[in-house]
Image (cartoon, rainbow, N blue to C red; front, side):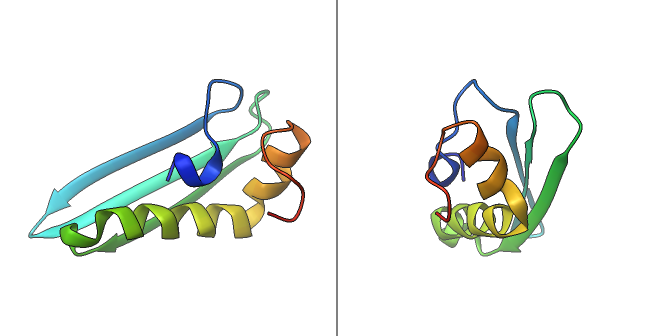
Length: 80
């Protein structure tokens, strides 16, 4: 997920994962540095698909507006 968002220390990006009943749950967020906007998304699936789940979580966050936040901070190109 962090790789798909070009995460670093310039913007609040967080991920949390846990395994429950053989299902991997991933929760991610992207926020503005001042905290006035925070986007949340989650995915669940087979633990064997962890990398794909992380990529899907990044795509969902970008689609919800993380692309706009990250672009404004110069971390990704607009429309990515």
